[in-house]
Amino acid sequence: MSGTAKWSGYDFTVYGPATTWNAVGGVYIFAGLKDGDWQPFYIGQAINLRDCLPSHERWEQARKLGATHIHAMVVPLAVNRDTIEKGLIGAFQPPLNTRSK
Image 1: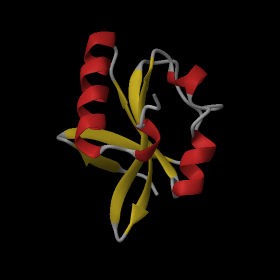
Image 2: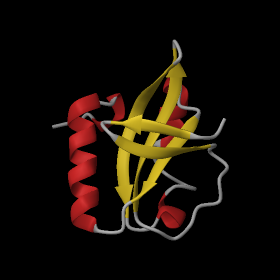
Image 3: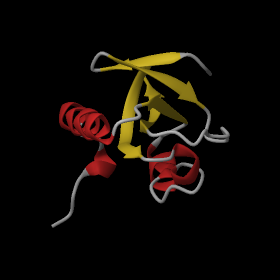
Image 4: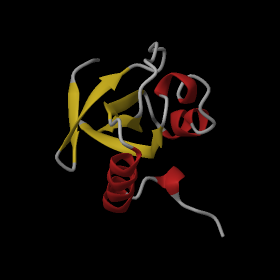
């Protein structure tokens, strides 16, 4: 599957987990389809998607919950990544973004 998915008005490109990533900053979502709709399992950001995503510590957990794809959007500025990530986590409450005390 390829294409785009819209999350809170932001357009994300949909990628398979074996994608070769570029060295760019961005926001990403580990997601899977449920009843025809994308469900987020983890939302994060990275300074460099190429360094972060291939061996991400949350991918296997997300996969076990039903993640099949990674939605990614290039966001060069850290302040913008912070704002987008925080807003998406607040809106969608992905299970793997729950912070333990």
